[in-house]
Image 1 (spheres, rainbow, N blue to C red):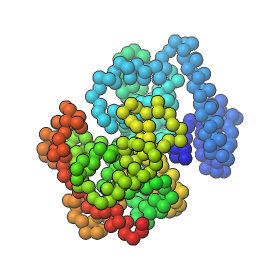
Image 2: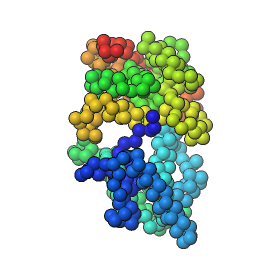
Image 3: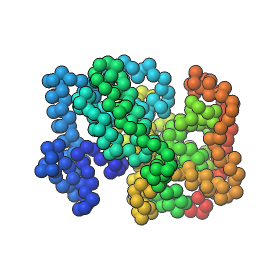
Image 4: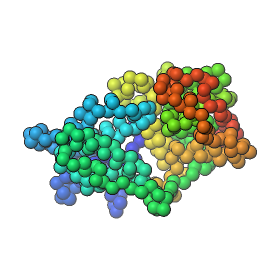
Length: 386
């Protein structure tokens, strides 16, 4: 199936019609140029074609006027500045993804004539939490700081965008997403494709997040242990480097991964893409690798197909991330102590972290990974439901 796309990821000029249903593609010429579509795919295709035409026209106008665009500033930033920043691992990957999206969506605009009011409106169109808003604002600030240094702009308009408070006293920052319950998990799992079922079960048993599940390789199983590097804490805590005693369920996961298809992929979680373009993937990434965002979207699509959470508002429906919470609760319900499931506890010794920062994962010895456990097998987690 094609990549699941949520409504908050619709392309420019395409909007859901809340009154009539369906979708509206709005022309940049104003309301008279708008067109209604009952078919979502047709609306998206039309909006993408319109966006390309508008971008091409804007780029031609900027080139004719000799003024720098946001795209040209970003290209200079990527070649002249980013290689010298100390971003590592997931930090580099996430920041580059943001910068590339900014180039994709705003690239043809005149950077000097793009003001803080426009940038704030753009951020508000898809950032639903303060953390998300501030992270994307920071990516814009990086671009505009570089542009100011290179005399491409006269003012850092991105810095003029006011950051949002992350206080939980602000209603918008309070978590509205509901936890995933066992019946909901089973309902989603029932309609999920085999590779997605495997990803869900792996997260449930090992209590790992989407990045760790997507990056889990057969080579990470060494001897009687599964070795994991937690992306979010890899530079700040020794608990970023953990080893989990291999259980019967984890051995089964490896067997299921190898039986998924005929692809000899290094990652447990993999799938044959609908459009196999190997040039899309980085050199260190297998063409069948499932990216974390794709996993999130695929889980969301399966959740919608299950119908189990149809009574909840879109913002309240559980995401793939909630599987870890379900796993932790199941462990507690079945009598396991909290210390056995808290896999990200703080440790005082920073020696392992320093070794990693200076030499990378290959510099770590297996005995420098913190020993934790996945307390329960899959059958215990799911009871008699399988």
